[in-house]
Amino acid sequence: MKTHILLGLVLLCLISCKTNPEPAPQPKFEHDITEGPTPWTSDEFELEEEDFTFGIISDLNGGEREGVYSTAVTQLNMLDPTFVLSVGDLIDGGTEDTEQLTKEWDSFDERTAKLNMPFFYLGGNHDLTNPAMRTFWKNRLGPRYYHFVYEDVLFLMLDSEDYEEERMMEIYKARAKAIKIIKGALEGTFEDSEYFHMQERRVGGMGDGQFNYFKGVLEKYPTVKWTFVLMHKPLWMREDEKGLGKLEALLANRPYTVINGHFHSFSNQTRHGRSYTILGTTGGGQDPADSLSFDHITLVRMAKKPVITHLKMEGILDEAGKVPEGL
Image (cartoon, rainbow, N blue to C red; front, side, top):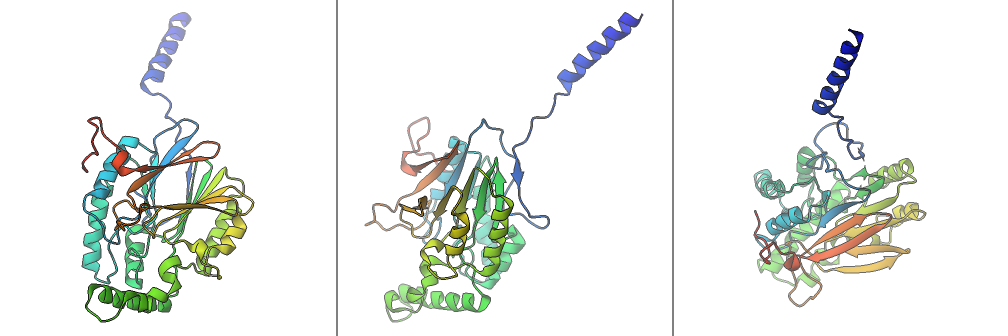
């Protein structure tokens, strides 16, 4: 009788183990946002081997060409990275009209929702042009700058439009006037405009609050395997206290990589012994005379150190040997 009971218990255990398997472990993902909206689309990640791959898209705007980003979404799904990062200029923006902003963000989000993996937002000058757009971003996407850790790799997502509100409005008004000059609505040349000579136009700015935030993040994660620093404008080109210099000093004793957009022209250089890359475009306006102004997707395979590959979209082909149409 006891033997039958024991056999029954063993059989019940085997059945239970088959029908209720142990849940698969989830990748490690950490952040410090505890309430409100979050600036990413999902926290569910595909399980990987020891290394993982993430994608990066560059500027959509500054003269977006229809259909390019939708094609990039299709190509990213073909390439299947673990997640996708951005470096800003996701909408045309540059307005205080909430209805227009809603329309533009809805359009971007509708296309982005077709990705099969999480997408991480980052703002550029088109996305964060004025205080009203900052408020819109906060209500819809949460923080303008943030960090996260994935599989012992730290990602710093910077806001390069981080100005005092008064200065932001000065830049906004000068930009609006310069656009009218470019369109012929006002006399003058862009090169003689106030906006053209503002250093923020090219290199952006970072306030003390943001610096102190990332200082705390780096203190919390002193020994991660690698650190990626993403931003829209090249803060590292600004040499005063509003630039990246103070943060670079804190990064000096760790391996890191810096990536930004904004110029719509690809370049790479070594600075402080580290790789600094300015991406091209993923649908943004291009200069036909610039051979480095091209549409591409960046793939980063994170093993012992990052292996970075820039793929021109015109070379990412489907099974039929064609550039796939956007979904």
